[in-house]
Image (cartoon, rainbow, N blue to C red; front, side, top):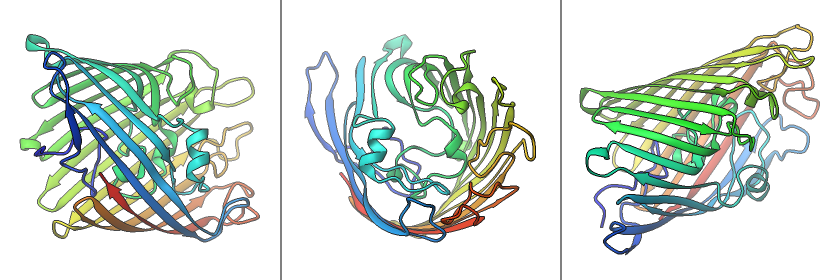
Length: 360
């Protein structure tokens, strides 16, 4: 039995991974074990001011995934298989089957890793479908403090195809990746992450960023750049993580250059070993209001502003969990037709979500 959860998939809490996943031994020259785990979860949703084509209430499978990984020796790997939904605040819900097919497929994450040994143990190389280095929220519901991804996540890569070099020594971790950005299938992005841990693990500072090397094909966001400054503080029952985001997109053809600034605060408070409460507050604003040919990068009109508030209590007992989430998004400087409700003119939306399942 393992004493700690496996390192991937990464999880920010409040949920914790199974510490004793199924495993079997491999030959000594390859390492120790191969581990199998997974997530089987479902959700229910109710929302006000639904957009045309969306449902006012629904139930769906949020994760039906398995994880296979090897975490020791010189040759390591990770692969994630299955179906998933990617609920996002302020965005119409897409059911799991359609979301899987429209995003990263039935193998959303899969990579091989060469881990240095001996004097080179601080270095590693990875290649495949890699989780992004950017942002303070992960891709799948069970990995995060809240069920839905936040507003800032909407402008960040989630999974990228490419290769990545890592250095980890003491409190310093540095990664550099050559990849296809926002899953564009064009290897024209460089992204990186540097983090430093202080005070015995109580404080972590991180700087992350990525950008296009010069190609102007693909989605608008894939042509630009994104940067984050992230701070995480652990104190007793509290996890507190504020972060900042800055996004730019270049001018191209008749489309003007634009920029976005975002700020978020994510927190979790542990009441006991089973009950936790998480919250998130966000604000983002974009340039280009009342400007001809300015792009609509937030989705609520060129130059719009959006903010959100989320509260999510969670209960977990061993492999089983249940949680609820109440969220609100508000907008300003908007364009009618790009908003909420059947006519696209409502400036706000309330959502109530429930999620339950097992992490095995």
